[in-house]
Image (cartoon, rainbow, N blue to C red; front, side, top):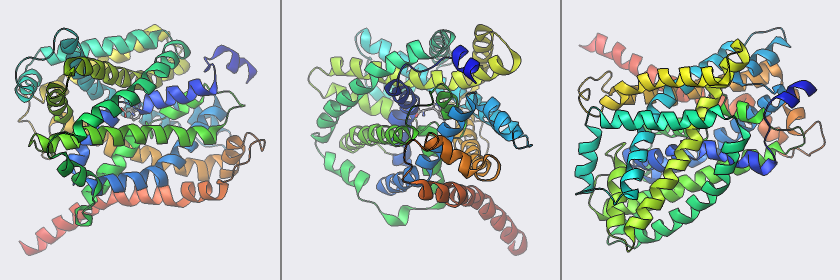
Length: 460
Ligand code: TRP
């Protein structure tokens, strides 16, 4: 164990870890995805379900992942293998599923990262031309430009991950996160004072309970996993760089709190503006790219704020994309003894390729649909709404049935040296509540689908 600790990277401090984990969690999921999912899923009702799921399911699973990682001191796959082998089982597959999910996510994440990079560069060089919604439509439906920016975003991610963990990841998060908070608050003030902003606020905070359907619950659950970087071993990998003295419980509360705060703030920035400009909240992935530039047009020094804002979203996105690439690369490094460079570059290349049809699905491939979803939406649905929750479900089973709640409790309390006050609660959540909730939510749409088919068969 000593040896492993010496040769592996480590965070320089607990704050460094919390910031890096928060850097992974806070990303496009909060600023880009959360507002548009809220808009597609009925507003405040979605927000409410999301908040409940964060605390019932997100926090215990985050604590579980961190404790597995720190105990095993290995990447996600290595950790599941090591801890299960100690009990005579082999759960390596669970880690492999996580790496596959990460691979899928980064492929399309980088496409959106590319959009952000383009906007950042446009703002740095004088702002976007013409009307924001026209500009956006024109940009994403092209064949080459978005792919080119996707390439650049992936390339930048590669450059950082090649240099290894602690240096870049920790330092950039330390500046980026506080700056992002401050800027979000400034822009929120402008959004909230736009004419008719209160319509957006109502939509965002007054839940209409009739809107809570199975789809809304699944979307909220998928978003909990996506936004907190759970279910694919990301927090296992980050936890593995953590030393044995640090306090896991505090991290597992602080990271989700910061993440949720950023998402909620982003909602207060976007939704009032959507209503004020008479746009549609349910328009999907383009929402922030259309509304934000509008807000900046309406603001004094809008160009400056726009520039700053897209720089910050860019940083938020890249601290998340590096965490995704790190999980994938660390597997090939630990497992197949590949050099960091080889693992990082080759995986990024394949993800770049998978990202191409994602990018084209906003243009020439837009009409190819499977289950009424474009290629981009399919990958997103598969990864965040199916694979990540499954990963979380099996992680709970892994802790309660294989590794053992007692072992997890030992790790979380640093072998009894830190009191673990919510121990009973944690055990209950991991053993019953989280896995059952995830299971029901995952199985429900299939059950509904099959029930519908059967009814159809008999009555038609
Ligand atoms: N959480 C990040 C976001 O909100 C995305 C992300 C990074 C992620 N690492 C992950 C999602 C691991 C799932 C799993 O943008």
